[in-house]
Length: 187
Image (cartoon, rainbow, N blue to C red; front, side, top):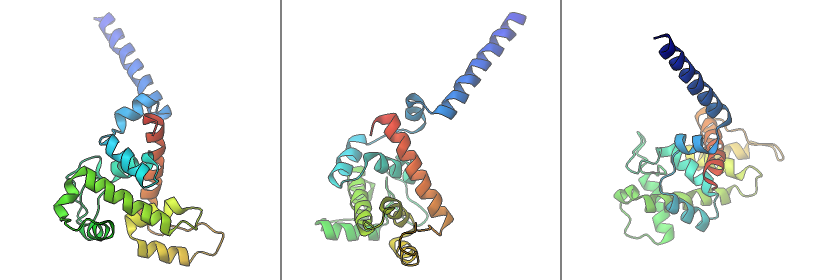
């Protein structure tokens, strides 16, 4: 009986040490376990086509939907990259998708294609700023209007302050998760 207790204690100590190591160091195997990557070929293809970092796109998908293509938000955003049907309709109109229907956003290929187009469009909009990617992510989350106002209110040479705490957290989360996707999957 005493030997069994010692074995259990030793096993718990090893599990505790491995868990502590994994949470602190976040090695590749832990990242792949904790942060799944579904639709990798779709994400890579559209990220490359729209000149985006595939790790950032994978991170947006993870943060927005946890790779669940049928996710719908309270605001009505749909799919992997959580696009509003009105935003998607605008993207379809600009890119030749004349037969777009909101249900199309449930298709991972269409959703990621439109999401990548939109993210690149936002990045180009803020391209004159050194923090263009962070601003594009903020606009992806909060809308372009508020971010444009924040940019206009910021003196030249200073970093734009993201004034919505939820949006600031979103940008930090996406950028930190993107680094994990780069490390864990070589994106």
